[in-house]
Length: 308
Image 1 (cartoon, rainbow, N blue to C red):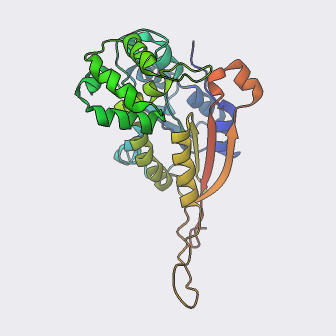
Image 2 (image 1 turned 180 degrees about the vertical axis):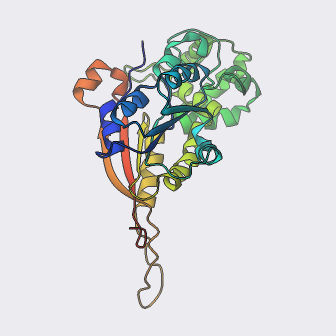
Image 3 (image 1 turned 45 degrees about the vertical axis):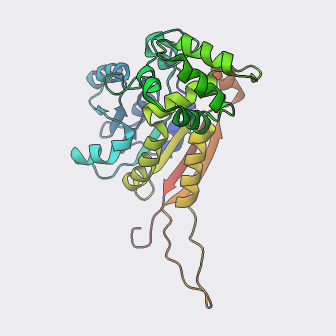
């Protein structure tokens, strides 16, 4: 399956907010669908910077750099967005978007080792040029840590039983082997869901430090967008969406008065205003089933008094 960008028009429209010029960032380039649409709507004086650590995504981005001089790709995680942009002289941007999780090509290419649907080497690294593979990590990890990982990141209630089976199996070389081990260990399958779904998700998130990277990325993004800048983030599972929701809530809420006696005037520490939460339309879900679980959250940097 070729990669179909989820919530494409909704994301770009929310990011631009009727503007047609500026400096923008795609924090997760993927195969460039969101970036290409963004570039098509911006004037010749605009700039778009993108981040990715997947070698195949970087190859696609290199071709786009040749086509459009307004675009530049940066080989790095979005967790390093502020340092990487500052290093090339950029301290503020007009908008940042991120499409979290795994792309369709990563899932569909067996050699990447992300999916139990396509047998391949047990890898799971988004940047497969460095770091431990899932195979190596499963050999090294303690059973209790593995169980906690599958429970926390995969939201799998039978994590301890599954972790025990994985560790008893020893060296697991392929995705099919791992899927079969989890399948046999899982006592109660969810309707219309492979029993290995949650375990694979938990292991993949741990291997790539996905939630840690999101936690690091979000405050940097707010620093970069500044007043009236837009942040648009697409998530695909509850752990990601909950993090984004709570972060935006925290950054858009006035602190409570916790003093005694006479009310004290609290400093306004808000940095964001909630703009929208959008899901895929029925038409999009029908044409691209992977959009079914997608949520887009949009926020805008607040203008502080004295910054107007």
